[in-house]
Length: 238
Image (tube, rainbow, N blue to C red; front, side, top):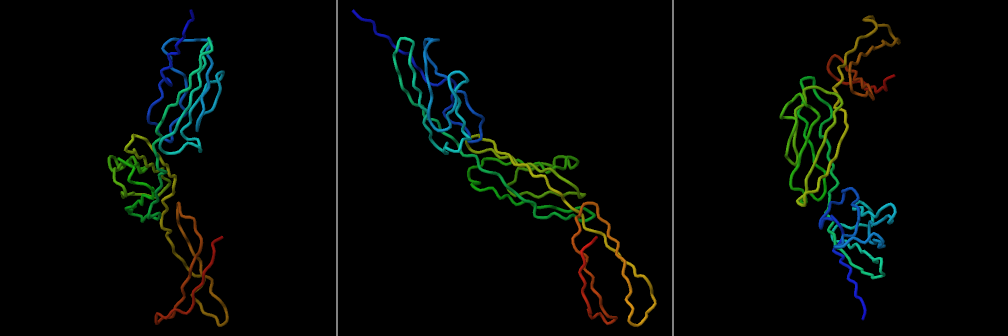
């Protein structure tokens, strides 16, 4: 007479068939029909790390994890020495890297419409888009579901613009852009004297008002009474 033991190994507990590439790590725990507190086990495969003391985990974001099917292996040994090896296939869904840019960064004093160009690659994987333009005072106009939207900003200043996208597999991607929508500098000038003296220069005094623009160059155009341009002078501020 002899006794035959059966290991009722069902699989990996609570591990989805499909995950997203940017998901947090999933804990890996054997799922058995009958608990065996003295059993030993280990997991292996791309994105798998850990040990029995600290726990095993599968990280979809690990570089070695490919978009598509990945295999995770489980080696299980019961307390009476029975060994079982099984493999689980898990599909890792692509999450595109979102990117965009504003096509206008200098606003007029009356406000301007700013178009946005969506630079995201693999747009065909996206099921829906969601924009937030960092302008809550504009109400519902602060949001858009278009691929390449535009938004009217009534004043310049720093903005935090957020783009979210949901793929056909239900994966969420997010990109945040902190940018500055600058104002056009208000420029004026006067001169030191109305008196002409031969071989003596007249000093020109410029005034520039701006709240958000970072000035780079002052460009002067000097012309004759007939409208002919006689000189162009560029000078860095400071």
